Image (cartoon, rainbow, N blue to C red):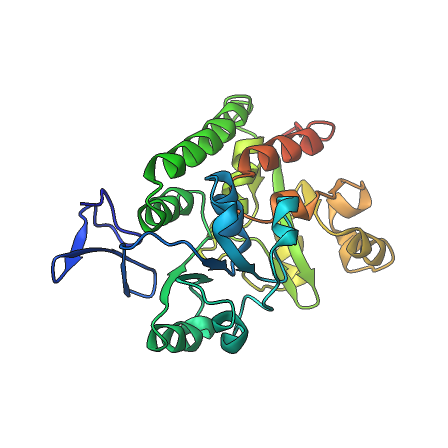
Amino acid sequence: MLGAVACGDSSKAERTQGAPVVVDDFGDSVAVRPAAQRIISLNPVTTELLFAMGAGSRVVGRSKWDGWPLAALEIPDVGDAMQPNVEAILARRPDLVVLYASPSNRTAATRLQEAGVRTLAVRTDAVTDLRRIATALGALLDETRAATVAVDSTLRAVDSVRALAPTSDRLPSVAWIVWDDPLIVIGGGSYRSELLLVAGAVNTFADMAAPSPQLSVEELVRRDPDMLIVGERMAVRFSSDARWRQLRAVRDRRLIFPDTGIVGRPGVRMGEAARHLRKLLRPIAPVAP
């Protein structure tokens, strides 16, 4: 029997009429047997994980957002990851489709299931999601050991950066701005909030449960973070806008421009992402009380 299910707090395997299954983040049971051989992954996190497990040769379709590893670009692109083209997916004759568990993908998951295709819908929002997703994929591919090795090595890399973080009570505060009109920031529900802590900073909006809450510029000014993570085009707009120049981080140019291809996803590159952020933070931190 399986050691764990894909979602929820249960640690028991489940069986449906004697057959082992995993349960995804839509609450649907997915039969484990036979081992998946033709996989379409419409989530960059799971695509990266499949390649890290040595199962890249089984991937027969990907989303247009999948760009790493480079070998993934050789896999046929079946379109968007949200509200995907079900006909394009079925044309690739998959025996397993992996989706992001967004409400907008519920209809696609149902249609694929009705067509007889096993469908695994998973959330990939937190560092802790990686192990349970790998556990599910390892079971569905009959590659449990490879899945465990991929996750263990990733989390060891994250912990190696965490061990370098300063122990000071006054870590620099960072607001990670996703968009500026309307203002959307990274909240405590996003893995990037934990990634900041690993790298030696604290998310200004870690107290907000949503992964990417929307808020007012006034609230951002009120909290006045030590640093901002922004896009380069945002930085240009901020420098000429009086509203944004109320922030010390803008006036003092304490702005960070990370590589979004590295830090954007809670996948097997999280150790690299933590090192990347730490390197960007070090010339600016620590901040005096």
